[in-house]
Every structure is written in C-alpha cells, then in structure tokens.
Length: 203
Image (cartoon, rainbow, N blue to C red):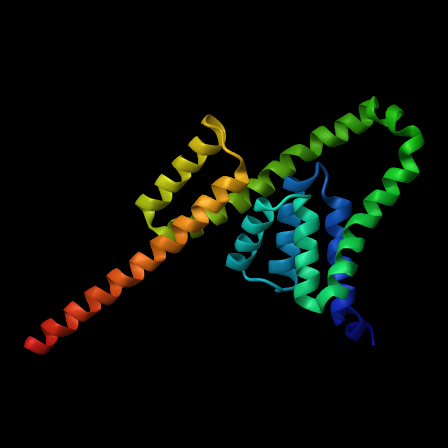
C-alpha cells in the first residue's frame, strides 16, 4: 500500500515540486539544480539532454523559469491536470510562508541570523549551479566537438556580458546554429560514408 502510494505519479510530482519550492533559496538559478535532480536523477522523468533542452526553451520564454519547468514536467507526466498540480505544489508552500510571515518580513530582513543563513547557503547554491553547468558544458563539447564547443562558450559570454544581448535572443541564435551544424555534420558523414564505400568497391 505504502509503495503503491509513493509510486503514484501525482504523489511524486507533488513531493518533487514541494521540495524544490521550499528548498530553492534565491529564486530561479538556485531552483534549477534541484528540479534537475528530481526530474533526472530521482524519478527519471527526463534524460539529462532532454532537461537541457527544456531549460533552454524555458529560458527563452517570459515568466519565472522554475514555474515553467514545473508545469512542463507535470504536463509530460499527467497532462494538463499534472501541470496544474505541479505548479501549485511548487508555488504554494513558499507563497503561503511568505504571506504568513509578511507581518514580520521587514524585521526578518534586518535579522543577523537570517542574513547569516542566506550567506551560508549561497556557496552551496553556487556549487550546485557550477556542477550542473560543468555537466552541460561536457555534453556541449561532446556534441559540437572541442573547437566548436569552446567557440560557442566564448561567443555566448561575449553576447551576454560584453554586447550585451537578451538571453532569449542568444538561445534562439544558438538553436538555429545547432540545427544547421548537425545537418551539415550529417551530410558530411553521409558523403564520407559514400566515398568510403566507393573506395572499398574499387578495391
């Protein structure tokens, strides 16, 4: 009975989204590694590559990124009802806590204890984001190759930090580049295969 309850997809969605909503201190960037852990590592709803694609699309769309990903995961697992359940489970706990603490929020914002808690959790969040970024970077280099991958990293930094261009535009540009890159790579591989077969036939 207990195992059947825990394996229920709605229960899993609620548990995962409550955990990410409650533990995601600092907003979107800190929540993403938590959602990735729940969706990829704990429940296996997505593969790592799929999560990267979802993250890219969510970044390109307006609105809170964590809420969009929660809605997508819920929809993927249980349709529109699942999307609603996932969003409510993700938003409700922290929203309820905010409303409950509204009367003392100003006092808490000046509290040395609260400031210390936030300062202490920042390194943890930074490491989690760094680990996720490193894994995504490895996959990018593996998919594009070292030269194209490093060039993409450098160009992304240039566009986001030096120019700067809105992240949604940068994501759209790289999505277009990725489509062209892999199409050209497939054509090149096909051409090389045909050439190899011809040579083998001549021999």
